Each structure stands twice: as C-alpha cells, then as structure tokens.
Length: 86
Image 1 (cartoon, rainbow, N blue to C red):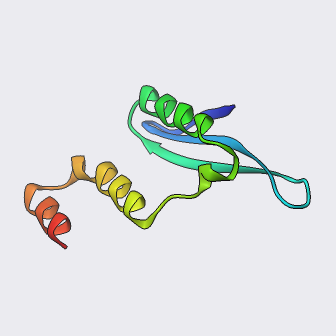
Image 2: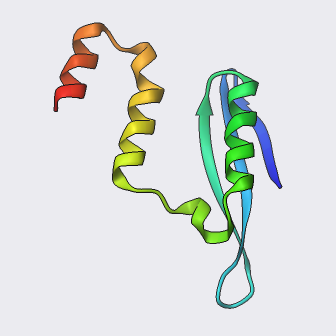
C-alpha cells in the first residue's frame, strides 16, 4: 500500500511499505514526483507492485533516466542536448 500527499502545488510525496528489516522493523521507500496527481498515482502503483526490498533498489542508469525525465520539461533544447550527450 502506498500513500500520496501533495507537499506543494505540483510536488507529491509517494511512500510505500517495503517489508521489514532484519530486526523486524518496518521499512519504506519514498519518491518525490513533480507533476499531476495521476503521475503520483502511477508511481504509487509501481512501488506497490514491486516486491519487498526490491522497491528501494534501482540501478544508476535507471536513476539517471528518471532524473532526465523529471528535468527535461524545464530545460532549453541546448541544455537537454548537453546533458544527453554527457
């Protein structure tokens, strides 16, 4: 189960329970989503579908792709090209 809250207009925090650690304490993963509530709900569904501690594990490549996806709308075309080629 994931929870969604709007931290400021257009900025959402999505949190999902990921299981328990070795000592039985609950663990969770949190994502910040910029955009509409539908996008936050999509991320919440994705986090809910992932199993246990896998929800918090992503590759560097996946993180970079997500970073590019989140920032591209606010960049000029030249900034996008500079980041893409780097």
